[in-house]
Image 1 (cartoon, helix red, strand yellow):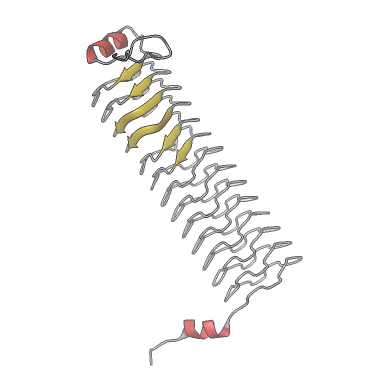
Image 2 (image 1 turned 120 degrees about the vertical axis):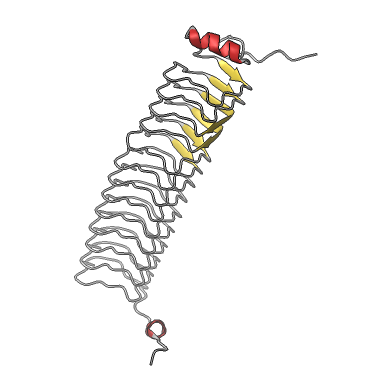
Length: 315
C-alpha cells in the first residue's frame, strides 16, 4: 500500500513543484507550508513571509532570502550554500539538520536559532542578533562580531579562531572546547562563561571582564590579558605559558596546577588566589599582590631548566 504524502502541521499539502510554490508565494500563503524535495537554487524569495515553514530536502544554494520572515522555520536536510540570509528574521528556527555553508547573515535575527556544524567563516555578525543561539561544532573562523551580543549562546566545540570580538558580550555562554585562538576579545564581557578545555592561544583579552569565567584546563599560551578583571575566575590546570597578565585583577581566582612558566604577572592582583602546585618557572612577578594567596607546592624557577633554556652554541 502506498504511503500518503506527508501533511504539515498546518494541514496544507506539501509543496513539491515550482508551480505550487510560485502560486502560494504570489498569494502570500506560504506561512506554515512544507516545501519538499525542491531544487530552488538561485530562487528569489526576498521579503517573503515564511514563518513556521518546513524545508525538507530543499536545495537553496545561492537563493535570495534577504529580509524574509522565517521565524520558527525548520530546515531538514536542506542545502543552504552561499544563500543570502541578510536581514532575515530566523528567530527560533532549526537548522541543525541542514547543511549551512558560507551564507550571508549580515543584520539577521538569529536569536535562539539552532545550528550544528555550520560553516560561517568570515561572516559579518556585527549587527546580527545572536542571543540564545546554538552554534555547536560550527566554523566561525575570522568572523567580525565586534560588539555582538552572544549572551546565552552555545558555542561548544565551535571554532572562532582569528575572530574580531572586541566588546562582544559572552556572558554565561556555554563554550567548552571552543577555539578562540588568535581572537581579539579586547574589552569583551566573558563573566560566567564556561570555556573548559578551550584553545585560546595568542588570544587577546585586554581589559576584558572574566569574573567567574571557567577556563579550567584551557590552553592560554601567549594569551594577552592585560588589565583585565578576572575575580574568582577558574584557570586550574590551564596552560598559560608566556601569557601576559600584567595589571590583571585575579583576586580569588583558581590557578592551581596552572603552568605559568615565563608568564608576566607584574602588578597583577592575586589576593586570596589559589596558586597551589602552580608552575612559576621564570614567571615575572614584579609588584604582584599575593596577600592571602595559597602557595602550597608552588614550583619556582628550575635552575637546570633555566640553564638548558639559556644554552647557546654561539661562540
